[in-house]
Length: 333
Image (tube, rainbow, N blue to C red; front, top):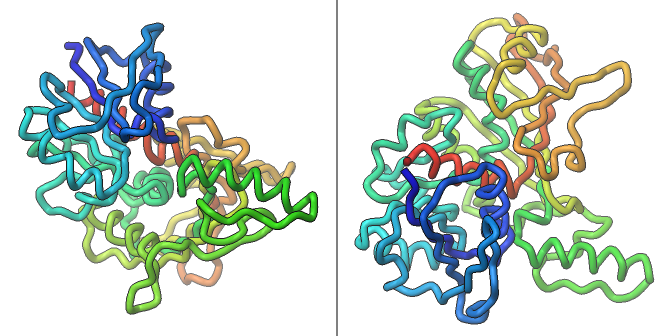
């Protein structure tokens, strides 16, 4: 049955991706409200051949709306989501605001889609780095429980929003022209540089992005005892995050067994050509729904063949955000 949608934060990078994905997947809907901040009011958005006018996101924006795809930032999610739920809508929220709330399902449909039916008006979309990491890990964990994960992320500018992507392009041009580099949307110069993810550092020295990956994975897997540690950095890539993942399993597992398990995993595609030295790259993952996985090899430092190394790339804006949210919405029908 077709529903009435609203998209909050429609003019942002993820909001625009909502539009593209709804068209590509031919998501059925009766109406769709386009909501954003006051500075975007009056802009025209085309969806399935129909023009919509952007309205200001307000507490009274949700009358008659069934599903809200929300990607307007944590503070706006916290402010406006209660009004949407009170109006009878179900909110699929892309911020970190509700992810660790025990009353809110945190969902990757290919992994724990059954949690969707337990919602009380809000369903949380996990962090992009988490989604991309666990898509290929989950099929392995189901077959052979993982005891420990070590993750190093190489995160694109898209994770900091559309303004950061545009600024990376500008910085590259300025640096090549030997001009002063603009630093506004980004924390530091990202062009020709790498820096640690600029989320807040906690008392233990880990930043929020690293802690999100650990806490969210445990919640989604319903596995509070899995040991997870991460190092997250920003790299000069426009979109699509990459991650180096080291896994320690309960029982022995071989690279061939990993390939067999991943060959049928939904939303995952193996790119593992040793002869041509061709493995997942952000350029190949950009604009794609699947998470690419390769460099599948035994970790010889872990005894009894219980260790595996992986290298993955996935589009942060698509599966890491907008696509996952739309998939949740589809399962709400």
